[in-house]
Image (cartoon, rainbow, N blue to C red; front, side, top):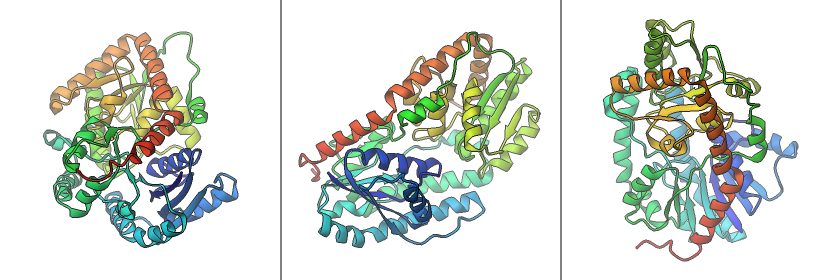
Length: 419
């Protein structure tokens, strides 16, 4: 098929959404011809990738917007990226119509960003639009606002308000009604999008994060003959926003330390909540156990994953959790919140899901889980093996291609018109 793709983030050398956009487009291009609308800030990287032979001839890139350096403040930079994305979607239709008149596309597909909060106008081309996989429907539990810095509290309130405003947006509601298929990253997102769309037809669960076989092989660890000994090696990563729940993890670790737990906790990332978490680390007396906010080069990051026993990041607002899935693939036993995407990805037997109740109870539950695992090191190995197998089996490129192609097929059955 000839597919018109909207993927503002698409960079083979980037991380997070950029890395996902690139992987997704490369995977889809194994089965279809792609015309990809992307941000101008990707131009130099994609041209470099093309020069290095990484871009197949059936992937064609068209650049929209202009490159502006991100603000040094991470929260402001995030708002800047949202404004840039809204401008991107406002600008794509003239080029999309011009290309469609020439190429006659079979499908349109939004790959990134994976949010419902900005409409994708490509449904107006008169061809089936696959909108997603979509996430961003998760709500931060208000009872946990007290663990956040003031700036993060303000951000979460603004996000909640924007979400209710977004539900009233004529453009967003039109996109939800007219999209042929709306894959969503987890069940809560599916229910949210069914309500927004006004019907369940065409709305499915389809996690957007996946890994190529080469990467799966690269991350697999060599399992020791005996369970790990010494202090627990605990890892966490992801943009340090308040929603990631690191404050909960630190409080739980402080309680576990009082009860004799020996551990190290490495968080290889930075973000707007870093200063708040550094202060909390000092207040809790964890300076010697916690290494916070020191990013790792990619080889060191992968090595740290393979060397860790547990992945601890009880995120309270997470669509999927790409780094969590990488850690699972590397054999870490995940300890996560029973909430959002991790609730479904961390299945029974491959990790610990901690109920989201209240701050004190959740801190106690995380502490208890860590002490229990520390006392049964063989269980850490068993959970890590099961976690690795789950990601390698259910979230690989073959599965992504199969489910994407099924969405393309179903989108052509004529059910894209609103009921």
